[in-house]
Length: 257
Image (cartoon, rainbow, N blue to C red; front, side):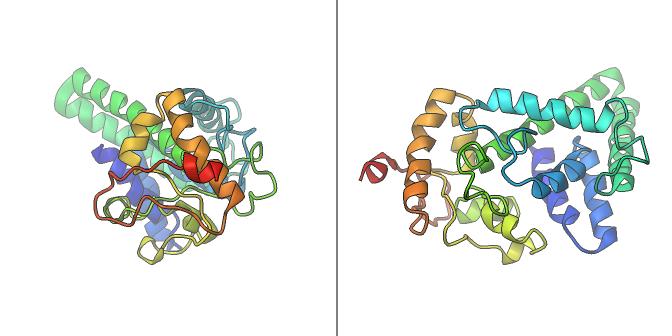
């Protein structure tokens, strides 16, 4: 969890205009065990609503299928034959910075090996896999039902689910204000706020991370809220801007109305 939260800081730095801060963000992503973060995330912003390349999950897709499909694509982009990181003739956003991220991962792995032997190295590799899955889980929560298979006429800059719990925004550097982030990815986290017409999650990330792992529970919670937002995009309903993030409401009655 520490390294997953670390990717929130890396994400913020990757978007900074200052090149030194951006490089630091790539290096931090590599240290946290996910060196593909910068390459993947900038491509994600450039392909709003794209479900074919697994930038957004399909509405009918489970978390497990989406995570597998997306990680496979990212892995091929990073390590596959003719991968852009190794081939200078293939263009990706900032390949040199992605190499910095890879070096950071390698050096961290070596440090774990030196300090704790094979067990330490294996522990770090397991944590890297967990962080990679956690990134896809968060992407699933942020963009489920908002791809080109579900709302092709509303994709725009890339819609994202938002949640208005203050504590959650503080500890994630406003990752939960994701629709606003897609509107202006250069805006610092401390200047982000809820978009007036964004789709709103029915609960905080902590609850929804577990709910997303069970497709039947996920769809029971999210389908009514998506339907409500599609019908009434200008009057989104939030769980309530509170300090704690454990509010939960049922949007089915509103959707039926």
